[in-house]
Length: 142
Image (cartoon, rainbow, N blue to C red):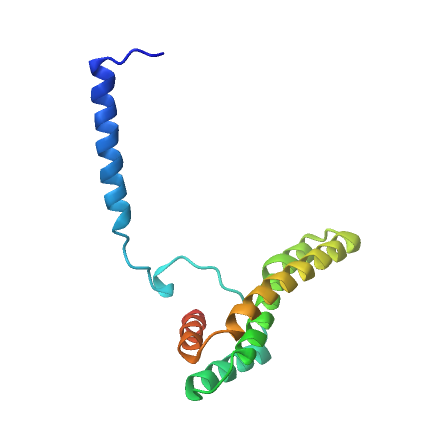
């Protein structure tokens, strides 16, 4: 057993007070920053993917009956393009060799499939209002 001294009681009281103050300050979170205000890493992709992106986003914005399948397909393509840009291009540039590059591509393909299936599940289940939120986010990145 440890003896409780007045100094320890005072220290514990201060710690408890600072915890509650910290908890209160944590409860008051600032609103999330806009995409243009945050540090970012973006990637370059083909003009064809850019055209597809704009067409899908515009279609969802203008057609209230649009289902999420087109947006889910677009997200699949964007995830794949992003992984290619951020992961495979540097490996090719580093000249790690054919076997390592193919092994990395196999791993990347598996990761893209998992991410895409999760995204698809949620995007296809969204109503139009929710799709518009995702569309607005993607537009803020373009």
